[in-house]
Image (cartoon, rainbow, N blue to C red; front, side, top):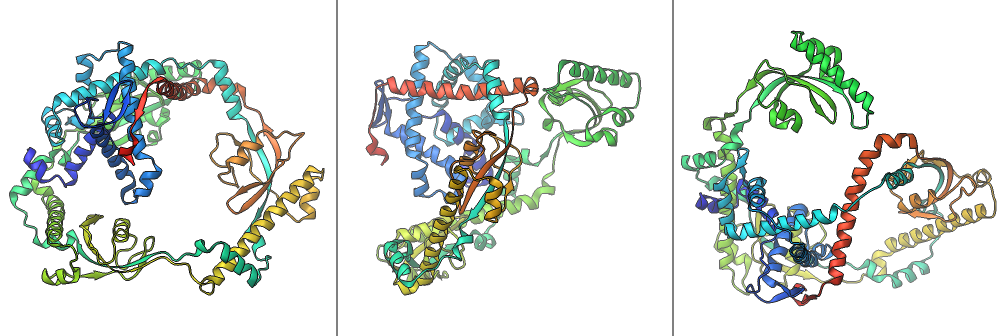
Length: 632
């Protein structure tokens, strides 16, 4: 089993299982904060964090972000995301939390540890914990159960500390009402928009102005470096014809992945819903519950379920007699799934309460789980194995050719010797599309990291390996004005248009400040007045304007007696002048309907704020020494 996992480590079905464990390791950490793993990168209250622990945490964190950003995760983006600092700060916080747990004398029992491991999705198979899978995945990641369980125990300890701190969060009814009042208030504003492009055509630009602008902004017009690359391509598709798939390969894959070829249990069911939402008052909930009870009583007396569903159900399926078709029990809501778990064909559930109301279900038919025979999925498996094995052959060929490369070698000569096609890109800049390859970031990054005549190691992009040699390199240069004159002139016009639009907008605001009426201002200047309609503070965009946080912050402070914003707002290439048209206060009568839900959300938010503030206070009081030379 373990050999097979290693043999097919590049296959997608193994990678999925391993990635589940990688995520566990990112959050749980692997190190033990011991002193025998190398030099220290930080000390937290005399507790040492080693370089090896840091590197392990950083690599795991990097894997997570690579999965999210794919080929877009450049060194520049890694730097912008501060992943190196994030990894170190995470280890420091983890050390502080473990220390605080010990100070508070918090413990993790063996029962708690066992349950957390047995319930983790990475070790589940067929709906339960699989010890064989657990051990194999640990071995594959070179971990002993003792190391893994010690790390998990620390993680549970940290969660206990987190719970102790977060449980101090409280939200009073008054706090909730104050926030509701603030968030439910809405405004409707009128506005004028002046766009820079509408002024650009009016801007006159002389040759002298164009020249002056160019001389001041030469770097803006720099022509980027370009390279011309010859390369070998190792595309798995070109190796599919060389793949030999045996019956043993097919059978091994089928046996390893039987769960993928197992059709789950399905039920054919009918459903009646009597709607009752969490915000409903107690009288409405009671009325809905009684109605559901009466319907169930009728069913138990022999009434036709489908007829009652058509007459009373609030679910869209009611029109079809409550017919839901074939569904998987596991896809149903928790309360419903548990209530019907033991029902057989022809049986009716008790009343089930959920956030949507009161449910009654009838099981019409049960289809038991079924494993699809190998002969029915054979072609599918052959296709998967062909792709995986072709990828393996392509990777091996790239590695073999890599080994043939010598310093100062010639890729063209090597290609001729091994009878491979040599491709050439033509000159391209790092952000440009490449002939035959399109936008290919890993390829571009590798090409621009090479000196002229230097040959790369094999790099992979979207499953294809490449070996590159830069045969021509053109360094970046500042062009002559004649080469970019039209572009420079348009840039001057654009700047002038921007200046004219701002000056016009600020002049209009000044007229309002001096007492001019909105109606006179707009009619005299032939300005179009637009309206947003009502929106709240929490809305992400302002209707008819879009995302404009500065406008949103300002307009809620306007009043009927002071309706004009005393400044111009700039978003993209547009200047806005705004005026309050009307304001609606929060509807306090509705507060009782949303109070519980709002308080729950506010408490969760407050928990995070309290916990982060507490972490920051621990850091401030702790003696933390960092050696940042290891993460530069």
